[in-house]
Each structure stands twice: as C-alpha cells, then as structure tokens.
Length: 94
Image 1 (spheres, one colour):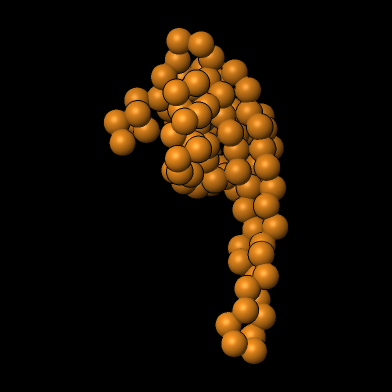
Image 2 (cartoon, helix red, strand yellow; image 1 turned 60 degrees about the horizontal axis):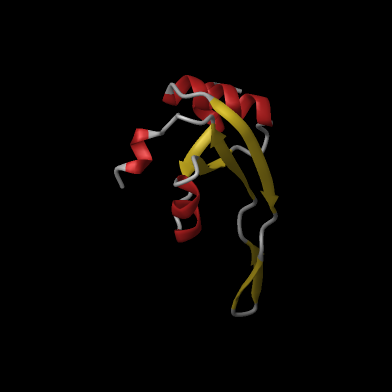
C-alpha cells in the first residue's frame, strides 16, 4: 500500500478537539492498513514521533430510503498519540 493511500482525512469533532490537548489526533484511515503502516506513514508525512496508535473498525449502518434498504460505508478510525513534547501544527491552527 502506498503512503498516500493510508491516511484519508482527519476526523474533527468536539471529542477529537479535546483529545488534541493531550496530543491525540484522530484520522480516518484505509481499512487494510495496520498499526505499523499507520505509524510509519504518519511520522513520514507530518515529521513527528508517534507514541501509540489505536484503531477501531466500524461497520456500515443500515439506512432506509422508502422501501429500499442499504448500508453506509465501512471505515477504520485511528487515534494517534504523539510522544511528549511533539505537536502537530497543521490541526492546531483550526
């Protein structure tokens, strides 16, 4: 898997903004990526040291549109904890 395919987008919510104060950043990542790939990619792209990576797999939820039933997309969320003293400047400016 190429480095540009691993991290898709940041997940921005009130809960993730609270986690940024402790150095934990939340991203939507590719479902096939494992923790070591996520860590190496994050360190290479953002030039910071990663302490720990936690991942959560989400299944699609059932949605109805009239008589039709479908599923939302599956996704994987990664919570990336930086080492003490490290800071991600890109998301702190938002």
